[in-house]
Image: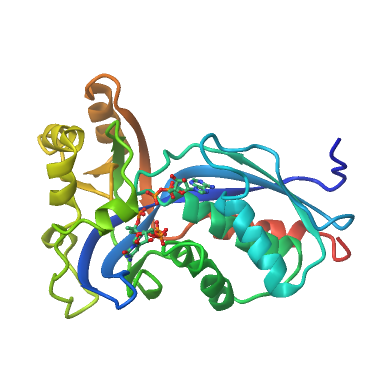
Length: 294
Ligand SMILES: C[C@@](CO)(OP(=O)(O)O)[C@H](O)COP(=O)(O)OP(=O)(O)OC[C@H]1O[C@@H](n2ccc(N)nc2=O)[C@H](O)[C@@H]1O
Ligand SMILES: Nc1ncnc2c1ncn2[C@@H]1O[C@H](COP(=O)(O)OP(=O)(O)O)[C@@H](O)[C@H]1O
């Protein structure tokens, strides 16, 4: 039996969209240099955390199918933070997984960022956003944007962030029935890697693109078919290395209408693009409720 005596606190773990994604070069270690515009969605997973001082174990009470607890980015994030700070406390973690995995919505990275930020508060570690971002980057290239919590134009592998304020449209997000691995796309010899670098941060999203999209369309007919269907209704583009596609609408009502017409069997949801992650307001609220000697 688990001896859980402290309350569980609930934290959101939102999705991200890459409103565009340009590949501008490749580093010597093989990683690609990107210029990508990140915005959050008001939609994502929910993570519950309870801390303990009676053991330093990290217990994930809700395993994710297909991911061993040992490999789960939530567990890895908690252990990384413990080791970095020599923290002797432990934690119980639960997740309500809502985001599709491997869809380019950044769910795993978001989960890692939520655990880092939440345990920093619950364990009272007081690490800065900069330090947490650096730690998070070792878990995945998308972790720093979720730690940062503001929409941003990202350079490097996604860790050099400049604040931007794209319009907060409504999106219909659809998932073709394929799993695309980030590594497979980045390792493909046909991936274009030489987009010109942006000359300013003030960019027109419509005139940009996702440099992975053509390759993915050529390799995965399910993605090509769905994208061809969606562009008849709204501007639509792939996020990350796929396979999810986001279609842009001015109102929620329009997005819901097209969702109702989707071909049968396509997983989808409607959400609003937001320039501040909803995790950060929750963290501030919870920080105020934690007793000083907890
Ligand atoms: C492409 C993006 C865009 O936001 O998102 P996703 O499609 O995964 O959501 C990210 O850069 C993905 O970041 P993340 O999913 O954290 O990637 P990682 O786990 O760090 O990397 C997986 C593998 O992809 C390759 N990789 C990743 C990022 C990058 N800039 N260049 C690469 O070449 C490397 O081979 C690496 O081993
Ligand atoms: N907590 C987690 N949530 C989702 N995926 C995880 C998690 N921990 C590890 N993973 C692994 O990370 C992979 C990428 O997942 P995810 O971040 O959702 O996709 P993407 O990088 O395409 O946005 C998954 O296929 C899974 O093997």
